[in-house]
Image (cartoon, rainbow, N blue to C red; front, top):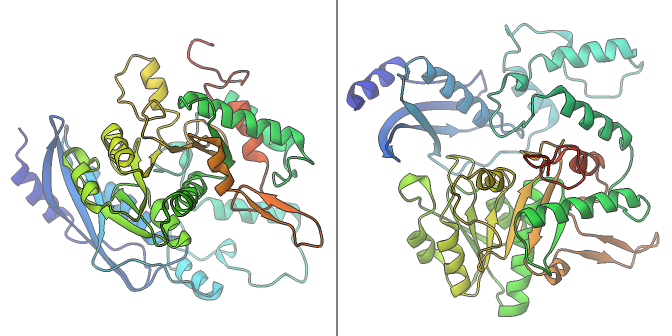
Length: 434
């Protein structure tokens, strides 16, 4: 048993406060508030409290403070200790839109390497009178890129999911170049894209045990998949139950995209407490549900702690109340099925559970394709009608789309069937080459 009292005191002495870069108006402090015994493992809980009076549109302060906090604690954690980081705010944190000049000023306050100003660090606010040569352009681009996170070294949480294999990268590169200019908005003009989208949706649906008669769509990422799922849940509740002012219920560990989707669709977002083990607390969710709830959410698995919520209990609860249930497998969709096939016990999280009505699964995470590529799947294909948008009053013709964006890069579609594990006929196949 580790001497937690000693460790807490040591950490507090070593790191009493933390400043993030030199971003004006953002003050961050962190403290070790508690420790937990989870699954027989000792875990240190580090709660980061912050008060932000200024922020950037890019969300830089939050990303920076998490990375800095992790690095700060690595030097003092002893073998066997695992730090769990949690962010809390004393007030609602809402980024403020800023004019580009002000945004640039704040960004420039974050040092690049040694903080010395270079030509590449200067922002351009108008089209130059004379363009750069390609050599100068790429020199400036790569100099700026030197300040970016070195994802090849790992440790870029939730942003990059590379295989680390040059052969896979080569396949992705060729697929992306082949569709560099195509527009995924119109699969009738580019039928190869339509075929690939259909195949990827079918592959993911099969992997998630979607039943016959299911339907789904290809999206640009997990947030779009979640946004469309919430939209469909809202429209279904309105059409089938007469819900006018609805809400969605999710544990606080659920991806913020659900809160964002609620904001965009005019729904109330109800965030609930976590149970032991950092999973969703079923009773807290039960208490938050009412007759206006249009969607209940569970994570399989969640970003913050890497654990799977009690999907079976949550989906049964939603089904008993006639409410849609979203199992979010954006990160776990290409992990949990293969763990199961390797003999690891995985609790049911997909359409094998009768209460699961919709799911999201990102192909551009552990499907190893380039961004953006995600899939949203519904138990019944007719629900897709709530996701589709058609407009016939435009002089240029009928406009019909099932995504949030109009024009879309085709590279995600072209990369998905070329590199997605578990897809029949793809370059990477299931373990054993099946």
